[in-house]
Image 1: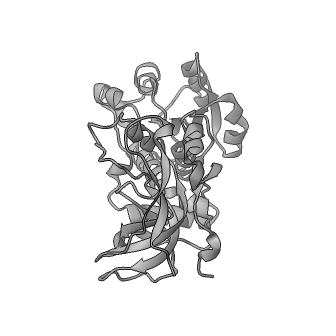
Image 2: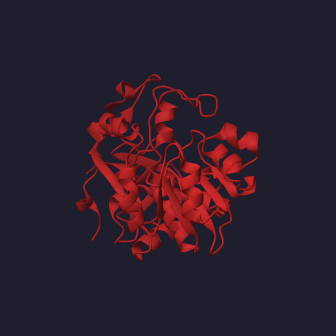
Image 3: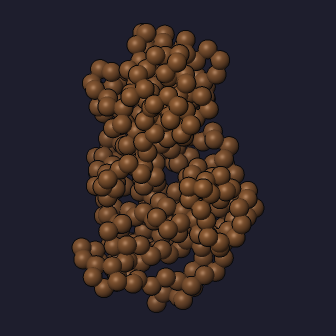
Length: 320
């Protein structure tokens, strides 16, 4: 029988990773229209670090003490009144808009879970909401067609690593901008590597044979200006998920996860691609829930390949 309490990440003021604590809190119960999920894996994301530091207070203010986390995968533990289509013991991919997934147990609206295919790894499933939906939105935003060339900054990161694969599936040639240590890995992903730094514009033009049709910025720090002013990419073929100021100034797209109308459908499509071996979610590292501070310390170095995931529950709880 489930206990009355659980472990969850909380912070009671804005700050660096030292404000994060794992504390004992009451276990949630499902109200009408909601489900309770025992969390097995939950990814962490750069936006959560920015919220914790207070950098996004004007857009997403925080009420303290605050929970944390959006992505998750786990097992249905309880079902509230009025919820159909799921059963206790079902393996699901879920998403929280209530900053709550970095916990042993989470309560969600019943329409914020979709089935997890049995062969999709827990770590990948628990990473699909923010990174997967964002990557899907960016690729859609720039309108790629077969034979076109797209450059993607932050190509080895969580969003970038999925975006390059989705762009390749559309028949585009992908130039992946990342550190030199990721060049061999990008080649293995059928992506042309371009090492960031001085002279990047010239390297991109040379790699593309002079024509770059679209640009997806997953990193910020001047890439939007590079795309429009130096590479001559039309603003309507540029999307940034980071540099809102440059996007507004130059008239590019700033489309990300919030522009996805049917999150469940997109997550299900991405999970199906993983199941079929047509998409992978690179996992940079996994940490226990108690080590959430170390997980964010690694994330905030901004040099990881793929996703960092909190391994929270025991997959043996899943129904076989």
